[in-house]
Length: 477
Ligand SMILES: O=c1nc[nH]c2c1ncn2[C@H]1C[C@H](O)[C@@H](COP(=O)(O)OP(=O)(O)OP(=O)(O)O)O1
Ligand SMILES: [Mg+2]
View 1 (cartoon, helix red, strand yellow):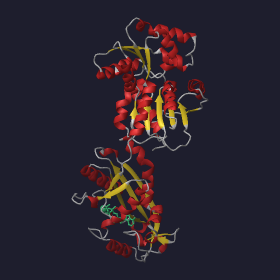
View 2 (cartoon, protein in one colour):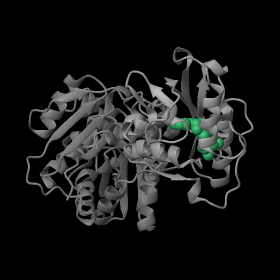
View 3 (cartoon, protein in one colour):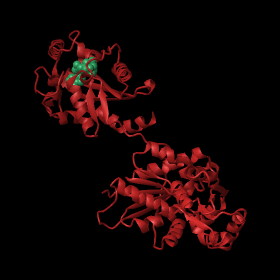
View 4 (cartoon, protein in one colour):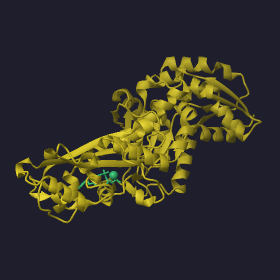
């Protein structure tokens, strides 16, 4: 059971013919509909553009947490269904398969007509789908581009509509077609006119009803149906003005409909890659890994470290700046592991020592990691320096690297100011923490809880900068 809404997309109001069926067949389901009326019609556009626009609609609906997507538009189904199915993790249903199936069920003469937009006709999607199921069946397709404009301008009942329909369908009237697919979701709004021209002997196929039967089956199959018993909500969005949409929708759905205008032009034109669920922190320093891991855990991302990959060779820190060293580590390990890698290069800059130990903080007292020796040297170097002159700062530069994209690293930094005290205080943290005093808190870094340290530290500040930027960065690459 799942109470999230089902998403419906179309270039305009045509998709409402599918929604109408959904309201009938699936009264308990929450529904979100989006019509891209501002960029209508889709029919004459190149397939690549239709696909890009469709992704923008989909990315908008994904923000509404849809559990299943119905492409209630034939042109978009022809151009984007395969791409959407490959890249989305929710079920995606188009209108062409169901419409084709229904047509095959109804034909006796073995000759099916299809009226659709130029894009759908050009794609041959109906002919391919129908003939894949039954190669004996003949398919005659006809583009009826003017129908969309008639419906969208709310002219479906006018004399103009009658004339346009009669003229457009003329080539089909003297054939042995006994079944005509309305291969555009706008066309059922012209159904009486189409039926009148084609005569009673021709069965009109509205793929909406058939599509919603498929939706119903999938909801059961994936256990996604809404059985909560709460009144279902229906939300309608249009990329154009709401007024005309509301007029057409209210009449077609036989109930007062309110719609909301939305701008989707800033939405991504392709799948939005999910953020990674695991990041490797390229560090051998357990203290750093712990701090970074705690912040990432809050984002739902788990952290591995170099201790999970014991056989890896060590990347040497041969740079002269934090950034250079962090890049060396991130790029080096990302290349070896072929995973997203985050490296931190950090250190202590003491003003009275001209910024030392700086990038040499880890090896201040000589090669190898030895916090006690480093601290002893620091205190010896500062002997005799008065308290007021013992100002210092911790600096952390973080570099996030994606394998295969060496020159696109995300780089952020953070710092925190403090004072070096002569006597160590506190048991938490690592490295120089017991000597790094924060005047505003009246404590050394080692006297803070892990959360408190992340709240004020150089690394915490850098991680917050990273958090703000990494979503966009990750999706660009
Ligand atoms: O929050 C901190 N609290 C206390 N000391 C700190 C901190 N952050 C950096 N530091 C000092 C100690 C460390 O030894 C050196 C970083 O050197 P740095 O090369 O970036 O790290 P590292 O060699 O310990 O581990 P790795 O390179 O494997 O990430 O600066
Ligand atoms: Mg190091």
